[in-house]
Image (cartoon, rainbow, N blue to C red; front, side, top):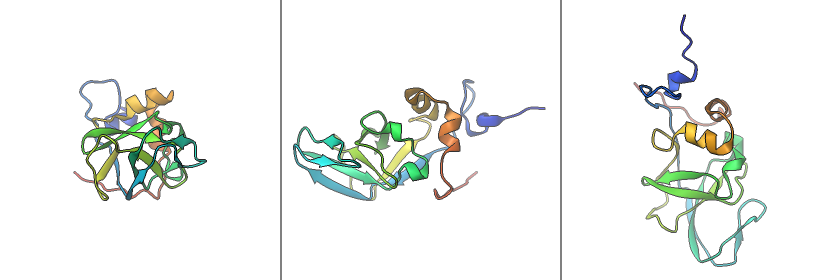
Length: 145
């Protein structure tokens, strides 16, 4: 018997495993924020300069770990890392778009082969299983071959 476990998703320490799971959303809105403005859940983020932010419609109710907020985690927008700023709320998160050319509707990658689950888990002090297991059923799944 062989138990594939998380290896089924291409996650593990074997160099022959290929990551196949990815979580994507899109930029729902882009907003301009002025220096000194407080934004986000509990208004914990204060802009230290004028900036452009993106609002992503995924939050902790979807299984996104709240510890990824406040510049701990990042997502990929047009192949570039965008820090998650402020606290992650129930249904959304904010990202810093100051150094990224982006528009509303652009794809945002939370994890994939490049922004891999193992590194995210290590950054959070947890294991990849927790990241995958906490994803809520309201996230639409698309299976391909």
